[in-house]
Image (cartoon, rainbow, N blue to C red; front, side, top):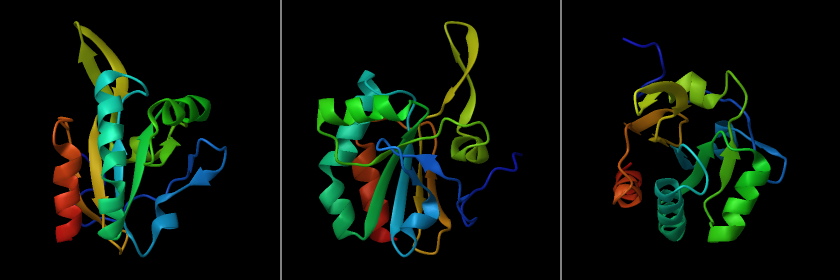
Length: 157
């Protein structure tokens, strides 16, 4: 059993870099519900679709009192290009430092592809309540329909 935060635990309050060079952390969203979606890499097919899906539903999330934050290890400059290229409206953050939020949650993990083992971002989503506690976790996310499923859970929270 891992000792990573789980449902009912407070989301670790670890700062990440914004594409503009500022910083953002979960406590910045206190009083709102927050969806943090972790994805492997900017501008890859699944990650682009996931970011576009969350961006397309941003107004619906806002109406449900829910903020969005997409997180990968990509550098801030790459995030800025990704946002501009695809017209993304869901904010992004870079969790590049060791000991970052993805490490604290266990979503920066060992992965395998073509028989090779490497460290990578697990596609996972966390729904955090207005109290800063984790209300729902989706791990090993499949992109199709995911943003809609998260929206339904946010509305129900």
